[in-house]
Length: 165
Ligand SMILES: [Fe+2]
Image 1 (cartoon, rainbow, N blue to C red):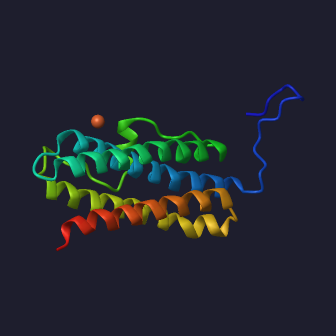
Image 2: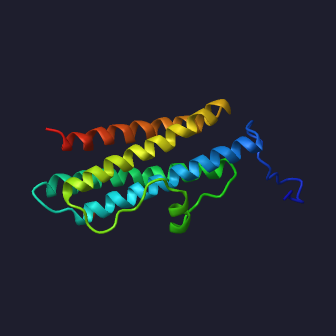
């Protein structure tokens, strides 16, 4: 709605169309939901991991969820800068995420497998949005997606390496 005060302009005019801003915000909302679900899974496993690899995994998971927590804010605030509300409830995250939550407490190696899958799923969600972002010439979102892809692909490799001989 237009603001009546002529000194206050609330419309967004950053060189992206309304349709582009909407499509990119929807894609980022999906990325936020996957990132949040991955964050929570990683923190959950930090709390509940057991076995001979306890110390390695407990510490490694903490480093991962700490980095992910920071990224949630960047993704949500990019959605806001594009003029849309950021999803912020578990209900929305469950609807939007491609990652399924894990029931119970898996064994340590299963935890690693779940995290590899979730890291890769988050990378795919980020990558799927790239063509839309590139076509719209939206460099800040492209930059954010590039950073997230780098982290998720690298972390997936590190986790995958724990499963190999
Ligand atoms: Fe802790």
